[in-house]
Image 1 (cartoon, rainbow, N blue to C red):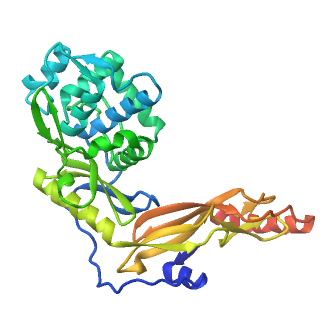
Image 2: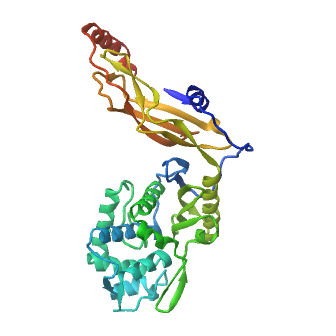
Length: 385
C-alpha cells in the first residue's frame, strides 16, 4: 500500500506552514561511501554505499572507547586506574612508530583518563595499545572484546582486529555501523562523550590539538574522529547539533584531509538546513488497514505507538513516499496491539524511516462461512504473493 506525501497530507488534513524555498539540487559528495542520519527520528537523510565494507583506520578507536566506557559502567575499571607502557606499545604506537601518538614514556604508568583523552583527542596509537594490554592482556584478546561489544550494540557488518585501527587483514567496517556506533556513544555515555569535543590535550608537556577538523568550523560539531588508509582513503565520523536537531555522519573514500573536512562540513550543514520535520499522524490516529483472512472483519486498522514524525526535504516534498508493508492477509484472530507491519518512508530511492504498526483493535475469528470464503480467497490469490 503506497501513499505519496500529498495523499497523506490530504487524508489527514495536515496544515504545513513553511517558508518559501528555491528548487533544491540533489546533494553531491566526493565521498565514495557516506551515511547521514537524524539523531531524533533515525531518518536516513543521505546514503551512498553505506553497507560497503572498508578498512576503518583510526575510526576503529571509536569501538575501543566503547569497550572502555562499557567496562567503566560495569565497574571493571575506573578512570583512576593506571596501566604500564610496554615496549610493544611504545615501539608500535609511540614515538618510534612515526604515527599518531601521545608520546607515552617506556615503562611509565598512565591513568586511564589520560589514556582516554590521548586516544580521543590525539588519536594516540600508543594509548590504544596500552589500554588493550592493560584491560585484556594483549591486542588479540582486546579485539575479541571489541567484536563482542560490536555484536551486542548491533554492529552486524564490522570486524575489528586491533585497538588502534592499524592495517590488519579482515579488519572492516561499514558507514552504517560507524553511524550506529557514534549514536550509541552519544546516547549511552554522555559523561564520556564530552571528550570528543575537547579542543586539545597536553601530555608529557606536549600539547596537541584535536585532529577533528569539524570542531573549529562553527557548525555545532562535537565529535568524533578521523581515519586514513591507502585502501579506503580519508574517512571521518562526525556529529553536529543546532536548532533542536542533531545529525550524525560517516564518510570514506576522500582524497585528502582538506577534501574530507570540506565534504563532511557540507553534508552536515545540508542535513541540518535542508529538511523540516512534519507530523504525519498524531498519537492513536489510524495510519491504514491490513487485510485479514478468516476473521469477522475483512481488515484491521493500524496505528503507530505514538505520533509519527518524519523529516522531509524542505524544498521538494514530492520526493517523499510512504508505504504500509506487512505479510498478509493476516490470519485471524488478531489481538489488539499485535505488531502487524511497518510504515516505510522513502526519500526518492532511499529508505529513510521505518515505523512499526500495530493492530488498533481486535478481530475475532469469523463464522464458518466467513472462514470458508476467506480460505477460498487465499487459495485463489495467495500464489501471487
